[in-house]
Length: 111
Length: 113
Image (cartoon, rainbow over all chains, first blue to last red; front, side, top):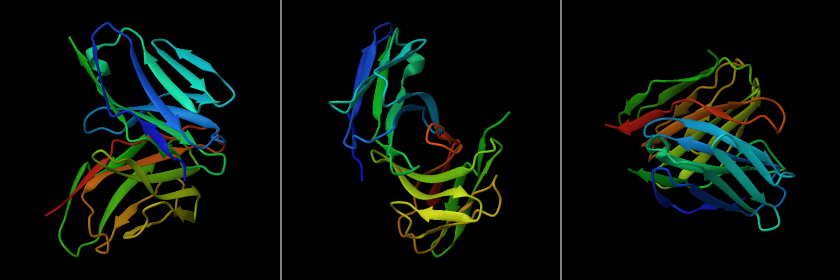
């Protein structure tokens, strides 16, 4: 199956930009997603990008996709303390419906 | 409001007991999924269903069972054969077509008494 890798932790100061990185192995992945999970809660869909796109921007969120390197990043501008959460990268393989998830990146925003 | 409802939020299981986790959606989605989340492990797929009366095993189906008798409902039973059931269980649903993202419920935390 596909491997999706993320760094486990990231700490930033309030007001700075955060960049969370993800790599995946299946080059035929059609869609790539970013989800946010707050403590004790389910996953909230933040944004997603189709594999033929390089970039997608949605308010404070910017997703960059380098398909050649199979690298995905999520940039959060003007990071706030409420952005502290676990962020999951997920890839949809061409062969099916079920997502492959990374282990999540814990983002800590300090005042 | 449309969404996915999981119940209960917390559940305790005794040794040798089967327990059933409920998942209901009113998003009119065809596909539904069950994931297990352990600390530091990300999400692992237990079962999924693309249509009523049909479901497939995911990566860690042993010790679990599901049914899909109605489009809105996809209950998960954790059987006594599942020897390490303590985890956070997440249900998701998605529309037909690969461009329909999955949406998640708020999860059920299962613990052993």
